[in-house]
Length: 150
Image (cartoon, rainbow, N blue to C red; front, side, top):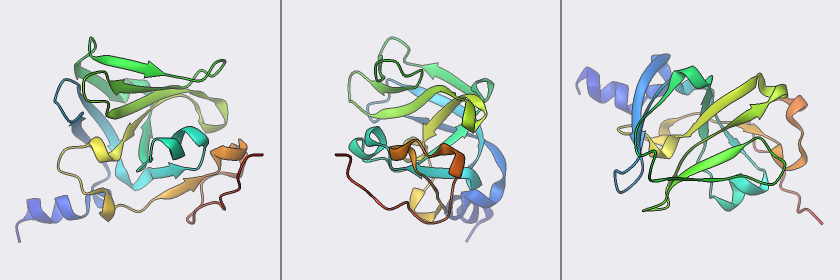
């Protein structure tokens, strides 16, 4: 096994690193400097409907869209400063951005399943209770109970 094989198998041990990623068809490409030890999953309705595989957040200056601005579409709920950006050609959600004061303000969050050469099944996730806007509770190591919204 080479050193590169070991790094790909356990990327979360590498600390802050610049990763490349993008959509399925290649129209959207980005780079992000992020520590994959901080990946998370959320149980909010948007994340659940997207089949959210997990994300890694960073400040906006650590994210660079390399190509595909013209292919990007955005979705956000009325009144929310948070959006999800997806490729208008293949439909893959690549990243989101917004402003959540409880999480430190403005952010970009990449979807870890859109990273090149990173196996998300080898990452350790933390869990947010976004479904109940329970951001103040913080991230925890086990999923929050799913409670249907009436």
